[in-house]
Length: 144
Image 1 (cartoon, rainbow, N blue to C red):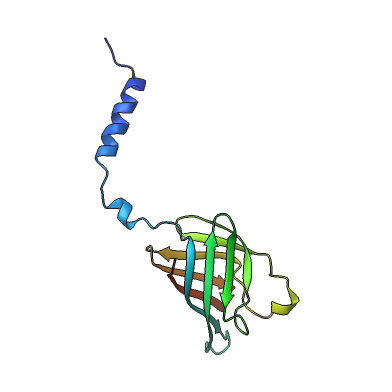
Image 2 (cartoon, rainbow, N blue to C red):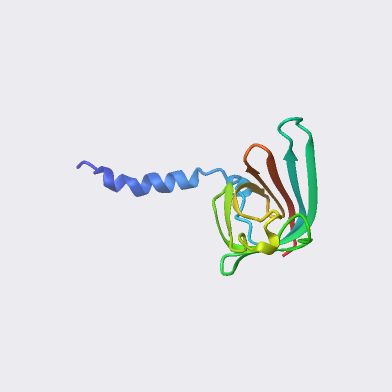
């Protein structure tokens, strides 16, 4: 009697699950949810002189699947208080800041757009760009 290929599928799946490297789950980062505190850095590079102008702010970022995200902290001059929705993958997170068009914060940086990130369970670092001259770096630590 011949075994049909469909009957072999569960056996192959079970065998491949048993052969998995146990360290794989240790290096795969979880999606960053919770509250983070750290430094925001905005770097503007002058295209004519290549001189860099850097500004900093200390921020708190809360990320929750049920309520979205919120940025508070030192939002007086460099970074705006931001809030809205986010959607992420293993390497990128996109933010939709609903306060973006607020006239009060139009000259400040908003957490809006797509950022690449790394997260090891404690340290959360995001990097973003706006054109060729603006870079945004968030270097955060999870506090809860």
